Image: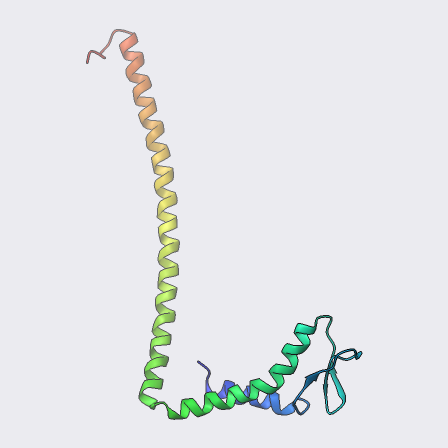
Amino acid sequence: MFTKEQINEILAVCEKATPGPWKVVEGKSFGVQSENRNIASCFRTENEQFIALARTVLPQLAQRVMELEGKVDPYWMNKAQELEAENAKLQATIAATQDALEEIKARCELRRQDDDAHYENYYEAKKALAAAGYGGEE
């Protein structure tokens, strides 16, 4: 969701740009032109098409967003912003929880390795005692 400031900033940038519409001109040294003035040249036609389209569409989209936001009840706009903030907090909590779980997993792995070593020592000692005639009668 865009803030009014962001929308206004987008429109201000569009206003400062060379007037549209921009068009791609095939076979010219500058591929994007407006009013027969060179705007931009790219090595790829797709990029030239994007640049030309963005000049026309971006201000239209910004205006449409402003129109639509004007039709939305401010209560729901506030609710949407509150939910976005809550979602950001939850995402941060999830990330922190994942980090904590990874740390716990690493500790458990180390603990398991230590336990394995202790059990191995226990069984070696038990075998040695049995070989020496002490215990091991099971």
